[in-house]
Image (cartoon, rainbow, N blue to C red):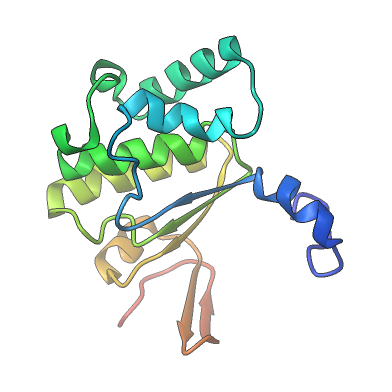
Length: 166
């Protein structure tokens, strides 16, 4: 990853590598007693970034995901789509090289799901590699990207482009 052989990497180098990976979970994993901005900033604070940098990067990513106006709201004051966009902002605030999204639309209605997918496509277009796990063939077909089908941990199909039939 990013020019490094992760199989041969020293254990002590793994934490630095993890900073290059953002993760978005199906169930958001937001801190309920923190605002949107605080949830996003948390990822920078724990890695030792300065206050000015935390503010700038938090503002940047909240604008990217369309939540600048909701920055002072708590997770329980947000819709499911807004919670997922907050989780995405938190995953993106460190400018990761790779974004891993585990069923990012699994708990969302169809309209909100497509908004999240469009945001993920935009993030990918901006240069972040996206790895997304989904069971939704409609999303896979709409994206027309590489599909790797796993069955009990084994690759059973690897298609560069095209439609996916479940």
